[in-house]
Length: 196
Image (tube, rainbow, N blue to C red):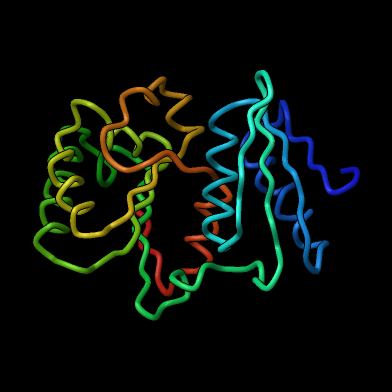
């Protein structure tokens, strides 16, 4: 990094966010500019800035995005909402529930999401990783449940690397694409994490 510029072009998730956070941590106040070469990295940086209550401005120059982040009068750290008592996270790492019969596992997963809709206020965030991201994509048997949960304010985060691996990013129908840095912030800031 030179002159408060983080050149994150060509770096894989979550490196652009991690390098940006390191640069911000080294500043008492002021600005940094992070340069990325794709929209996913740009959006990840902007989500990070929002979670840290930082000002962010984006300028596109040819195929690159220059993201100006301003730190001053704001302590970089966990978003206040994440520290609220009762903040619980549900981490789902597969598209079926339990081990054994896949058919039974699909039935159990549908039952789980039906129960989540009926049991209001259980979780603030649902994080989907590995084949779990398939649950939020076109054709998923639990999409209606996910949409109901979103309408109630539950944030659904789907791992971007996992969506890419399965070729499903364009088919995401519920929630939003996230990255490992943001996912770890939610997991680390939770009062309780239930992993399935």
